[in-house]
Image (cartoon, rainbow, N blue to C red; front, side):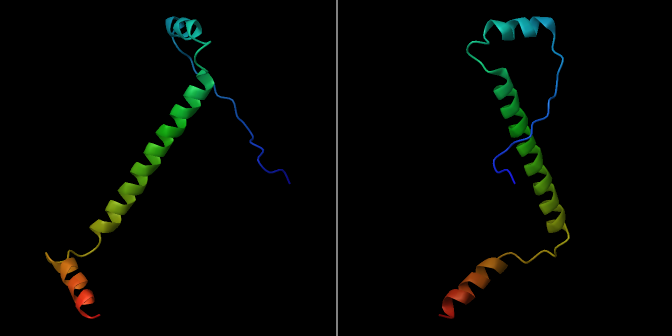
Amino acid sequence: MYYGVVFLSVISIRVPRSLKERMDRVKDRVKWSDEIRRFIEERLNEIEKEEVLRRVEELLEGLPLQPKGFASSLVREDRDSH
């Protein structure tokens, strides 16, 4: 079994020629594959967080509402019982 081996897939994108020319002008300062990979990871993290939040909101919608001050009264009751 190999540990730490990462299997990579290749994706390709099309960009306007003018954009590619601009990227080429700064390629000695920017590793575009790293930049694009980092962007994709960050964007996927954002989307996954949004999905989790949406699921939590759906679950909360199904719960009954508690009267105002309910949580405070539980905390007070627990504190006073010690």
